[in-house]
Length: 401
Image 1 (cartoon, rainbow, N blue to C red):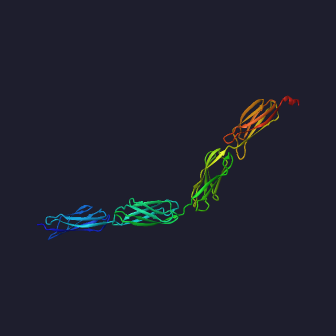
Image 2: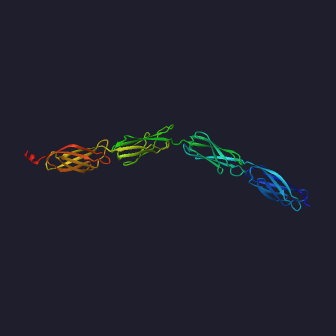
């Protein structure tokens, strides 16, 4: 006849922490002589069902993945030919695992206005295991700091700021904990060094509108933004659109840079001044300035040779076209000569590279009204002269005299 048994069950460690494996041991005690053999079935509430084989009256199994809380363990000895089944119970308590929180910043140190990324890493303390979830609250002291809550992902939370002021900032990262992991706190310091101070660049023109050929001086003034003080150094690049424009880089002196040009074509030009920055001052660009270049005023004069002249002889008429200050340069285009004394003689001739236009004609005797009208071109306005008289005498009268 089979002897009765008593089954005792224990768990170690107990309590366990989240992620820690628990060893369950059943000891089967015979009521009488002999040693029970066979198997023991362990049923863990909210956990696995495991089977262990008796050896020397004991059987052990390992339970892993137990969640936080209390788990009832029932160990059932299944009996053998000489011993009857029996059951024992115990309770396993699984508590939240402890964590550590570390916080770093990069780059460290940073410069004023530079984005800085803070990273909090939350890890379980052994023998706890797993990946914590929840949130981390970053508290950053000093100017531009504050309190910011970020979610964990893969055990990490990040925060990026570009608002921190110059100096040393204390950084505290507090992990909130979750159902399986306890809260923890990490600290760090972050240093922000002074960076280049912001600047403002303003641009002015010496004359606007100007006329073609007139020298125009562009002046850029670079000033540090308050509360920064000092005199920026470096260079300014002037960029001018349109005909005769381009770019020119000029050095700063006393916080100003100038560029003078007289080569701008007529029309509208956009002008900007770009400050390069230096060790202490940040780069900046001016607002766009519109420079208007108008047609230069021209003046046309006329002369002839000979005057008076004999009828039938060739007479050279010369028109000279020039720019009136402040305009400059040599006009191009044509001059139309008109000679009138009852009859009308008209001739259109080009202006040469020196501003002269020539026409040679023979005229009948009389008082000829002569005009010379310049047509104008892309850079110079039209002009003319009409109060000029050419005297032509009859050859016979001249001989008799």
